[in-house]
Amino acid sequence: MKSKIILLLIFTSLELFSQSVVDIKHKYESFEYRQVIDFTNNLLLSDTSLTKNDFIELHKMKAISYFSLAESDSARYVFIEILKMDPEFSLDPIRTSPKILVFFNGIKDEFNEILSSAKLAEAEERTIIPSEIEVFDHDRFSNSLIRSTVLPGWGHLFADENTAGLILTSAGTLNLGTLVYFIIDSDKKHNNYLNETDVTKISDKYNKYNTSYKIRNILIASYAAIWLYSQIDLIFYSHDIFTSKIKPTFAITETQNSTKLNFSFQIFF
Image 1 (cartoon, rainbow, N blue to C red):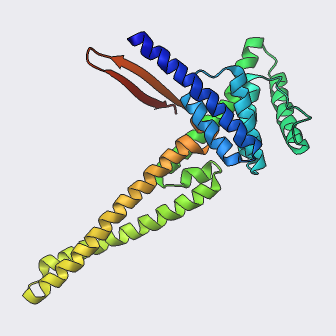
Image 2 (cartoon, helix red, strand yellow):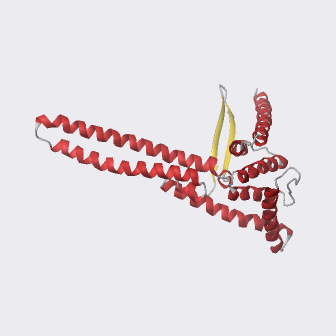
Image 3 (spheres, rainbow, N blue to C red):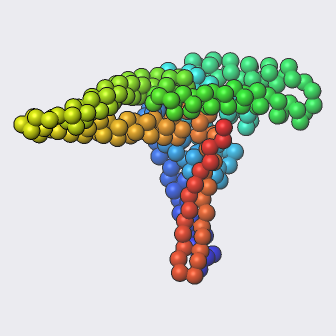
């Protein structure tokens, strides 16, 4: 029974992976670059069995998509990830835009210069240079995440996700400012209600307090929702350096009466 379940999961995963790659290529050929990025991020996050060629092909489409959307910093990071895997990687000059070729070749030249300047031992060459890039990525990841926990959208702005950052920062700041006002207002009206001695005014004071109290609670819930969405969007959908820091884990637990599929993930600071 257990072996059948495992085989079924393997075949299902292969079918879904194949279909996902086909979907991504179709989106890429249709110039739907934002969806290419989103689909690729989801696939890289959920599939741990990617081959080297799969990794490079998916990242190539994602890097070109970023460049086509005028997000050159993100495109640069993705091309660096490809060069970490294969320093000899080159784009097809026939099927690639001259602007993209110039952009990529500049990154590759810079990458190779760093490798050449580190001429120690061959083993050190393969670890020192990626670690220099990873130190920068690690610092960017940690600082973005810390800022995001302080104020929704701040981490996005630090990670150069300006559109999402401006929207979330504006929404979070407006919500938080209004929340502070109604916390003070509801507390003031609560005291007014408790201190009221005129029977004819007690009901009116209570209604004012109750309205302010309910608005305060709604604002607390809405700020919590904005804050939570901001963290999820930053970690899972914002940037390659974030998805690379996440390690998803799937596990099958079989007992006498049931089979459970467990999913968890770790975030590496």
